[in-house]
Amino acid sequence: MRWLIDNFSQVVDLAKTHLYLALLPLLIGLLIAVPAGIAIRNVPWLRKTTMTLASLAFTIPSLALFVTIPPLLGLNILDEMNVVIALSIYSTALLVRAVPEALDSVPESVIDSATAMGFTPLRRALTVELPLAVPVLISSIRVVAVTNISLVSVGSLIGIGGLGELFTKGYQRDYPDQILAGIIAIVFLALVIDGLLYLAGRLLTPWTRTARSRKADEPAAVLRATEGPA
Image (cartoon, rainbow, N blue to C red; front, side, top):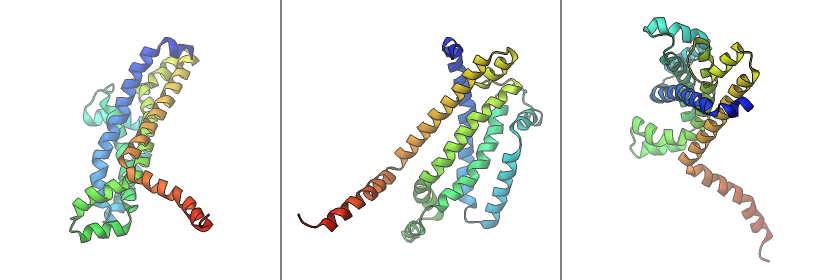
């Protein structure tokens, strides 16, 4: 803990790099998975094929991807894009499964109403189904964000920055305090990002709070009705 306090500025710099390497792939994954998920949702064979490929992609060990990508794409082994590309593959693999499942949570009555109002399938998906699917989708986004924050540390084994450097350098120096500082920093970072995404989900879905408050008021209303006039 003392090492963390004495080297706080260094930890902050590594945390910034760590966040960049974790959150950029999340954004890329969303940009790919949202349109892909909308496109495959109602096409059973394509959805099944995509899910199978996504599952296979996620089973590839992260370290294997980190060392395989450079020769395939002509990148330097120490290029941060190796980690970004690898984690983008994982993010897309997880999110392309989550998007159709989140869309499936939208009530059929809502979809039928939007269709009856003349919404095209694309407009309905973007303006009705996707917003209503946010509560389910945000849970998967939180999982992907925390997973990426954890996986970035593996990149330190091939010399790419981030808080994982504290593990490798602490191990090389046989300095447990530095390793402990890395663990604390990564856990703290994951908790902060997870909390921020949770709050973002709440802000994007104000109707869920209204529904909960109404549901919470129902028992009291029933009790008042059964008591009758005083």
